[in-house]
Every structure is written in structure tokens, then in C-alpha cells.
Image 1: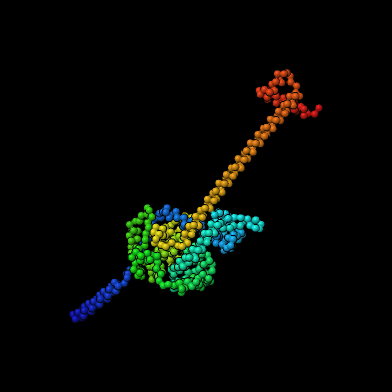
Image 2: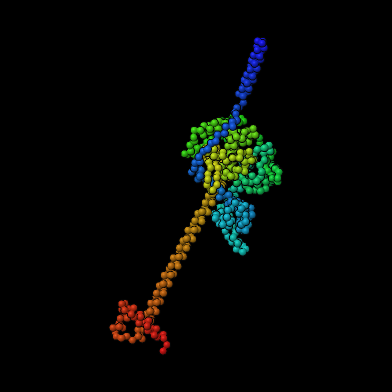
Length: 470
């Protein structure tokens, strides 16, 4: 029995010794890795109060972009229909209001912006026609020149959006890209005739159910993509280019927005997590982990960085939920990270704004078409001045007409009074000449003002009696 116990003890010691060696060997291998992390399911339910920021609420290029969009759509319709004269009849666009995003009658919308559209009578039946103003024509030419000069930049932005999609093929439906066309700054001709504008960078893919998609072609696939955060971190020297290194998100807190201690501790731990690039495979991540949330925030940061105004309506981003592998409640990412995203409630909608693009402008490259849209917005503001001056002129003309009418009324009163005085004098002369007074004193009293009423009654009685026959 003692020998058996000793053998068993020696066997356990050997097992423990080999297990320790294996564990030490595994730890030595882990030291060679660029990162070691554990995915935790401890999801912290963070709620942060919304704080209004007057700076982001006053950015005209964002909030007036919604009003500018149908104007540019109408302008493009006029240019494509009449590239020589830049004019069309109202019948050509009167029934396309829903397609162009106009909430009321198209004719009324065109008259609302006289700095863009000038109205005149057509050659037949006196129908209203509209043509572009010289300033609008000049801006349209400048916009087309920007598209030609910066075509590669605009194509790269679309390419990055497609490469962020999940799956092996990396495909986005064409209808999804068309819904984001305004934010990506793509020209109308690019998606209207995609076959002639692909140039080897993209290819059309059949996705089933008569649905076509757009994928990156062989000429456009340049290998691994780096996100905006990775590029900025590499410039600062805090990122070595490895896979899933820890990158800290830039935070820009609004004035008066304070975080509780629990939320602040959670934010510090969240920043220390590895950064998952939007362009790499993330199928190994758990959906309810903090690491998965950091991937979602990174995708939203990269997505808004590609847009023209670095902002978009929140409801427009929901169409990308399935394509980019985002969770069902992706909107909560904006609410849980107010130091990165600002939610504006202007224009009866919710607009998401990337703070870094406006607080640190050198961090994110401006879109080539952004400057042209600012010029369009300035031209749009001129319409308000024109309409206001028209109202003032119409009011002044109406007041002048009223004054002239009053002058005519005064002249009529004077003429009437003059005629009455002449008739009264004529009547009194005739009556005095034929009237028989009782005494000279009574005759002299005719011109007396105190006896005017008595004289008038006497004259009136004489006229009545003379009008009665025989």
C-alpha cells in the first residue's frame, strides 16, 4: 500500500509539472502577440442626458442641406432636359414633385427661389416657363468641373463604403447607394448610367430577386484599407499598423455635459479596448460585448467621415444596418457616445453630426463638393432677400394707390361742394328776383347768416309751389 501511494504521488507531481510547463509556454507565446484581450459580456447600460449645443445647431451647411437637396434636383432636371438654353415648361416637372422630394406644388416651389429659377411666358398658350439664372448656371458649371477634377476622390469614398459591407463578396445594393447619393456627393449621371461610369473600379452583381448590387472590381481593389482613425493615430505615432491595436477615440464634450463616475469609468475601459477596423472581418465578435460596440462606433465614425457634411439624418443610416452588420438598436450608439456624435433635432428630424469633423478640422479631409454646396446655400439665401424686397415694393405700391384714391375722393368732394354752392347761388338769385318780400328789412335779411335757414325754407317753398301746375 505505501508503494502504491508513492507511485500515485509521483504521477500527480509529473502531471502538475508538465501542466505548469505548458502554461508557461502558452504565456510566453502570448507575449509575442501584438494584443491580448478577453471579450466580456458585461454590457453596461449607459444613459446620458442630451445637451443642446448652439455651435452645432447653427451650422448652415448641415441644416439647410435638406432644403437645398430638391433645388439641386430641379436644377439637374433643367440642365439635362435643355443643356443649351437651361429652360423648361412647368408641365415637364409639375408631376414629379414626389420624385424630386418637393412637399408641395412644383410651380410654387420654383417661385420660392427666384435666385435660382426665373419665370417667363412660353411661346405657346402663355404657359409659365422657368429657366436658370446666370448665377445658377455658373455654379452648375463649377460643380461639374469639381466632379471632373476630383473624380478619383469621390470614387474612393464609394469604394470604402462598399468594402465596409459584410460577407465575402463585399456588395452593396444599388438602391442603398442611391439612398446615400446626396451624402456621398455622387453626381446624378454616375448612378443613372452605372455601366458607362464604372471604369473598371466597380462591377454590377446580381443579388437575387431582381436586385442588383455594386461590388469593387479588380482594378479598384488595392488591398487592405485603413480607416480615418488608423491614419490619424499613425500620424501621431500611437499606432504601429498592427491588427486590432488599442486606438483611443477623440472625444469632444459639449459645454455643461458632465458624466457620472460610473459612466466615466466605463468610458475609460471602453477606450482601452482594441480597435476593430470597419474593413476587416468581425464575425468572431460577440454581438453583446463592449468590443462589438467599439466596432459599431468605429463604423459610424468612418461612415460619417466619408459624407459631404460629415452628418446625415439618423433614419437614412438605418438602411445600412443589415449591409454593414450593425445591431438592431444601432441608434443607441449615438446616445451612448455624446462626446463623439451630436444629435440635432432641427427641421423636424434627427440629424447625426460627427463632432471631430468640426472641432478638429485637420483630422478629417473635407469633401471636394462641400465648398460648392456652401455657395449654393448662399445663393439660396439671396432668394429670401429678393422675395422680401418684392413684398416691400408691393406694399409701397398699394399704399401709393390708396393715397391717390383718397386724393380723388377729396377732389370729388370739393367739386361737389363747388357745384352745390353755384347751384345755390343761381337758385337764390332767381328766387330773389321773383320772390315778393313783405318789407325791405326782410329782403336785406336774405344775405344775413342768421336768417339763412329761414331764407332757404322760403326758397324751397317757392320752388315747390312753382313746380305744381296751375
